[in-house]
Each structure stands twice: as structure tokens, then as C-alpha cells.
Image (cartoon, rainbow, N blue to C red; front, top):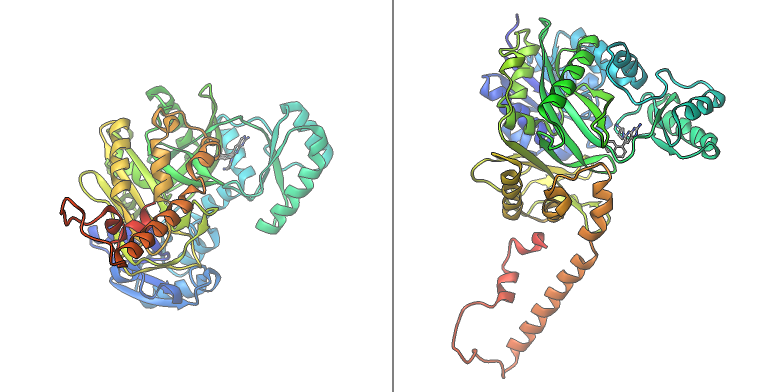
Length: 504
Ligand code: MV4
């Protein structure tokens, strides 16, 4: 079996730093790549070597297969880690790596391809008798077939793109009358987005939870699951907060979900780390949704609770080594929560807020982990996703983890760009979150009360008050307070350079 000696990390940001750290702990050398927008990025500083791969636009750098492989070969790398996003679920990239004699640190190309086609994935789930939302397995052919199926499974139904995923190209249809127009829209959207207009149909699951299961498979036929992650706190299919375990899942359901996930992965010929997504309804019925053939953003919560280093496992499996633990060795201890800290302004329509981070003091302390792609003085480019960092905390139970997250968010200071920190703090403090009453609809429902425009006016009021105070002090009549204290006023403290601006 080939031991890995040098890995090219075909990614940027926090996931590139996560993979570099994993490699370094295993004594594996790392090669970073960077676009013109990332010359001074953290992953470039952290890697043993770094090479430019082109202009900022992803299509001309991080998505350029030919360039990445040329750099990997000339740097003498023997493997490539794709991270998530970019080329992570591109079967052609996995094949191109193999053709160039490079180990792709991910699943075999056929498994990526199968799971990329959501109807093929549904076929596998059906064969393995994994529960699925009632609907079509094959793409629907004509409008008549769609109408027949919709009536059969009952409205409301969801139209989904066969080559889609992650919520792209989905359409909710509440009645016969809406079906034709929705089909047309979904097909044309799917053609534009995925170059394939095939769609399939499912009954709509009302107010579901999104729960996913981490699996790990080696090339020797061993496959294990590491339990579930609760990912229901999302906005427009972007997750904001994830947890391990889910307060909705008991040991019995965990075993059922885990076994179902392993069956799907096994049938797909899966090797390496992967995630099987389920919808779970109010009555704890679960339905297979899709499989993600990559290391996920939210993998750290699983690592914190199981003690299993997923990047280390990925590297070992890619080198042909067997998993060094069995299913019965996997235990879940305590509770982990992750918050995604994005450079976005939740008080201004979640507008991206790229720019230079002028001040940065990440949270730290016991059981706090900061998986970051940033440092003070670094830049969040406008060309890529807005993730600055993932803040992960662990506690002995959910209440302790929530309290620790509240503390860590309060401690985390970023200036220069707007961040999602204040709204994350408000979600964590919300009664429904505290009580574990989660669903995929929760965030959209409570956001209006969490992000009033008042945040803006508060800043303006502070500035106005400070100016008024400054004006007053300029006047000859202004004097020392009668009690003679020389302590700085609260307003002056608020003006101290640094932290106040990002705090809100
Ligand atoms: C659904 C659904 C309800 N019923 N399918 C969105 C992402 C994609 N992976 C599947 N999604 C959904 N599929 C049926 N039959 C509701 C969603 C959904 C959702 C799922 C997970 C997390 C957040 C979501 C937000 C809105 C809708």
C-alpha cells in the first residue's frame, strides 16, 4: 500500500487549513494552490509549498483541472485532497487524478457519479430498502405522468432536478392547477443550472428536520457510521448551525439511520468519508434524500463527539489502509455545536461583506475550536463563499454546549467586515432553539424578530450621541463632573478603537 508523502490541497479557506493540519499531524507534506485573490491567504502561509494557479474567478483557478494536476505532478505530490465545493464532487476530476497517477482523497469516480444523479441514488436506496419519500424513482417523462404520480402520492408535491441537490431547482406544487407551470419552470431551471432538464417528483414532507449521517468506508469492505448531525438551522439551503447528536434522535433511531446510511454507501461501492442525508418528519419517520460524496463543512461536530479525526481517516483510507476501529468502537460522548461565521450583514439582507479583516480576536478557552481561514489583516475576497471561520464548541450535554457557544460568540471579535456573529448569538438564545424545537422552517420564521433594522439605528444613535458629547466637551462651560471622577465615560469606551464596531 502506498504511504502518502505529499498531498496537494485543491481548495482554499478554512477547509484547506483543516486538511493541511490533518496532513501535518500524519507527517505528510502539503502543497497549497492559490488564485491571484489568495496570494496572502492563510492556507498559503500554512502549507509547506504554495503555487499560483490563475486569476480569481474559480473557473480559471480552483476549478481548472488541468492546472491543478500539472501543479500536483510538478510538485511531486502523490495525492490530492479536494476539500468541499469546487471539484470535490466532480467525477471527472477524480478520474483525471487517477489517470495522472495521483490518489484522489475521496470516493471512487463511479460512486461520485452515481450519487450525483439523484434518481440513480433513489434507485440504490430503493434496492437497499431504505425508506424514501413516496414519488418517482425514474425521472418523470411527460406532464401526464407527472399529474398521475402527483395525484397518486397526494398534494402538495416537490419537483426536484435529477442532477440537482442542495435545494437547487426545487419547486413546491400545491395543486393540479399549479403543476404544468411548475414543471416547465423546474425543467428550464434544471437545464440552465445542470445542463439536464430531468426532474422527479416526491410528496412534500411538512416542516421536516434535516438530519444527516456520517459514514466512513475503507477499501477492504469495512463500513461504519459515526451517527447523525442535526442540520435544520438553515437559511435558503445554507446551514448556519449544526449539532451532534440530534436531540430528536434516540439510540434506536440512531442505529436505524446508521444502518440505512451504511447500506446505501455499500451499494454505491463507496470508499472514504461520505454523508447520507435524511428528512425526518414529526413522527420520526425518516426518508433518504441524497448522499454527499465529500467531507462536509460540518464534519467537526462529529469529530468532537466521537473523537474520530475524519481527515486522518480519509488519508489512511486513501492510502489503502483499513479503518483502525469497528462499529462497536464508535461511541458518542457529550454534545457539539458549530456556528458558521460568515462575512455577511444579516441586518442588510445578508449581503456579502468582503474586505480586509482589520481586527480579529477569535474565541478560545476550554472546549472551543476555531476552524478558520482568516487572520488579522487577511482579506475575504468577493469571488468565493463568505465563510470566515467555523466556531465549534463541546460540552457534556446540550445545555452546557449552548452556554459555551453563547460565551464563545460573545468573545469572538471581528472588525473590518460585517459578520453573522450577532444573529448566531440570537438564534442560540431563542426559546425554540434552547428547547430543541428545530425544523428546517424555524429560521425563516424567527428571522424577522432577530434581525430588525433597529441594529442600524442603534449604531447611528451611538455616533450621534458621541458627536454631541464631543461638541459639549469643546465648549468652555464643560467641566469635570462634580464628584471629581476621572474614569472614562461609557461613550468614550464605546469609541475605543477595535471591537465595538463589529459588536452590535
Ligand atoms: C424536501 C422537502 C420536503 N419534502 N423533499 C431541500 C434541500 C434538498 N436536499 C432537499 N430539500 C427538501 N426536500 C420533500 N419531499 C423539504 C426540503 C427542504 C429542506 C431540506 C433540508 C434542509 C432545509 C430545507 C429547507 C427547505 C426545504
